[in-house]
Length: 499
Image (cartoon, rainbow, N blue to C red):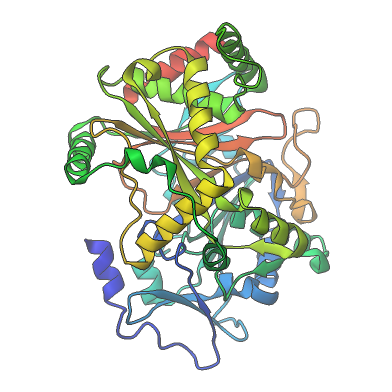
């Protein structure tokens, strides 16, 4: 693969940094091959922000304690493992942040030929296409398209690209997924906001920058519980069949389309009432058995739309990502008391749905999803999955996600709602002027309207995937997905019924 070749080019020389560099390890989960990609988070603000103040505050944050790790340069060791070299100190020639600014101060964002397509609230529920020409707002021209290019150029890991309009600002922060997960992004936004507000003393410490806390958690397990989903692991022939179907869908199926979904609070409430009514009508369910979360409801809704537009004979394997730090008391305790672990702690959980269930009423789908996820994210099972994945990664293998039926339709979900990412940034001190009247806005000045995250070098193909980005200040859901056109048509029809 080209990606592997790009990385390999650096293996002989990329570790030769400056002698005084501070060297940080890249932990096992961070260095997983699936994380060797560059991700951009683009935030839309309905205010005009000072780009220089934003840059100064972010640069200062990455000078504090082990936040410096985020300001370092990736290097590839001869073993094929990554490490990070942080300059001591950061300089103009070797900054903590790669910063660029584009200005369209005489144009409203709604009038720009490309930026006007950026997701924005609407009067009712809506699907919003994302322009394929949006790349200039994800990162500046010349930004490394791959991790191999980033290593070869000795580029900073974190890039800040600000685009100013007459009435709005787009703030894009790009970084390699080897650095951290979405919880790390949340901490970055909060720390950045604190520095901007002159409250540097309140910035949380970065924990575990040199010693992987997941290694300690794994080593301290007494006798780990057997992995409950092990009974559904596919054998060699099953894996081959699943991969063959996946490749067939990827290369000969319709091209997946990336779109945003705006779901106002009132529309979601109607969906929620429908699910609760269906569950209440099932006499075998007790009140306790009827509980489903908002995430379960959204997952059921999208899963049914996907399954209903594919072969009726195929079961569905829903792969949900969850964060181990929320499931392990030790990590919760240490983060609440001492700081933040800026690293990847994401694990998978699987909900296996029969063809009939996946295409039926939403209530039973949501309930089955809840039961699977509750079992697999309990502390003992979280520890077991953590250990199983760690062993695979340490052995140089990719994590084995092959569970379910060989002919299953794979659907990936990532629910970021509990992180409140749209409330994590408060750039009020950087507001030059408000871009929207007080009467029209639902968010405080200096806070974002919505955000969008996307791979810098987004490629077509892959499985159906859906992300719950979270709720905005008005309580409306923002979602994004990469789905087939006929699935988007189905979702659009259901959204019209919610109006």
